[in-house]
Length: 433
Ligand SMILES: *Cc1c(COP(=O)(O)O)cnc(C)c1O
Ligand SMILES: [Zn+2]
Image (tube, rainbow, N blue to C red; front, side, top):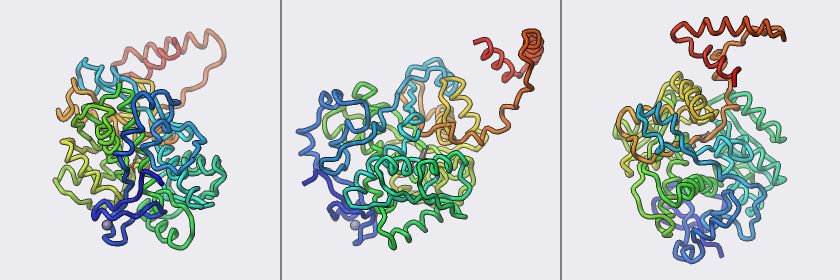
């Protein structure tokens, strides 16, 4: 017998373990519930810290099939201080309290979606599926395709046709069948629900959704462990379907329940792009329900206009005393560049949303410089390079001669005299380095 099973979030009816995401009685979403009393005896800080540095070190707190053997060292991404970014975002020198959780380097496909897929596919196998599938805004597509290849499962991936080319190629390369749909994510997702009724496939974010979502908890477990088994004051988290933010909250609650960290009220701050901001709009207008939007933003990985967990994300944010904000597309690009220039991390648009929103929250004094704050950077910038097209003009090549270079250098230094010619200055520095 396992220590977990599906339970309705609203009426509490239990459903055992099966590929299902909705309660038939009240049509509310299911989530995985655990027997925490049994877990208390088996988990400890010591036992966890002796295990290899990947998300499987928290196996007892994940819904994994019996005798499951992990095949990839997913997760345990770096958490580090970001003092220069802190100075720029908060306008103070109190930079030691801002941290980046960097899932831009999560294995194997460079986003936090590897965590959710790792858990979902463990169950897909246990339920006897030979084909896995998903609707995706890009990163989930990459992760499902890669993990399916590794597990020897067939993959059918459904995406909006206008996704970033790197995200489409980064799905094709694993041998997955990619179906481009002329529509937005919400339309793709609706189609997948219909397909899931017709075909016996494991849809990671439809019939396997409760298991999938649990994988996101590992972001929260790692943050706490990497802070020395301590919870931060604030979390800033990007939101698409709204699942990740609720699962980091669940992770912290579980660590408290199991006595692995001291109880603490952590404030949760949600980040969205203004062009697709159904959750932050609800928070800002004081509504507890989502009004669906039609997405129009470069932050395509967050472009879900009707978020499945929107209602619960609002509850997490408001219940914690946090807030939610959103920023424009130009601000997203500025934030991508700011993170890269201050801390050497190249994030995708979703990370830009998080960093830019954090700046806004510091300016609003909703986050204070002396508070320990963790920004969740969830994806890699090499997947969304198209949004930076035109930001860095291609320089004229020079001949491979010292005289040519000296002339070029002089010219560049002359430009540097001009106030505001920042890009040129940095170019000289990088040549010099
Ligand atoms: C999917 C995704 C998110 C948001 O996750 P949800 O759980 O759907 O809110 C954030 N960042 C990136 C890079 C993603 O791919
Ligand atoms: Zn129910």
